[in-house]
Picture 1 (cartoon, rainbow, N blue to C red):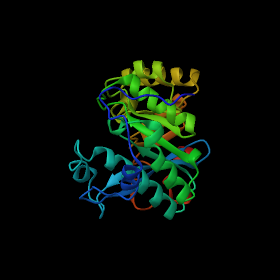
Picture 2: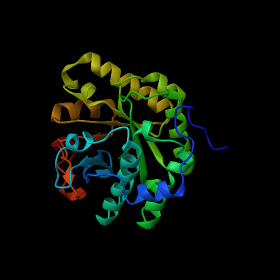
Picture 3: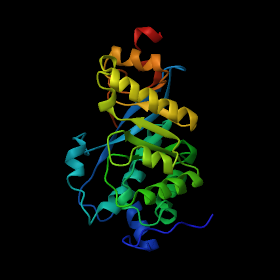
Length: 266
């Protein structure tokens, strides 16, 4: 497979010095860390993955960090995020999959930009096949086909891929038709009060059916109530993320025996 080429408006080259700078977090005048929230498999009663959620160095909100990201530092921030997420997960001895959000608009050439991530995985002995790259479907990107090519390249290398906030943004089914990720994460606005909203139930059933035919796993995000959980369980959704099970833990990951399990699956 030939390396893919970026759109014309994206810088075509990255030198080794730039890659080293990203790895070391140079060029950022702020620091950050991560909280980790579990994604649970209600059938096996195990933690399927932990999503790395950006936080300030002392646990401050994600918005306090993201407000400092701009066009000048976006690429370096995106690369530094990957290294920090892997480094912290390895220190925690995380044995589950690790889900990392990335910024499609921060990527120049995926086969080059991924080098820092691969090096971090190697340095911290974190298996590549346990890393999931999430991209937010709700983020307006410059080129939808470019996003598909980036995700396709990541799959080729061996990473898992996910479309986050599915149903909330600008691509939706068109993106899914162009690229089939390993995972689709249903937007929490679709999940909120789903037990009381027949229209939302129909949409989720439809997306789940499509994903089943395409061999894509479905994760329901933002599950907060037992009634939401029961409704999703009846639909056959087995991967769930939300406060019902655990809030994000700053620089920590929850052991399976400390998860809060609803009575119906005990």
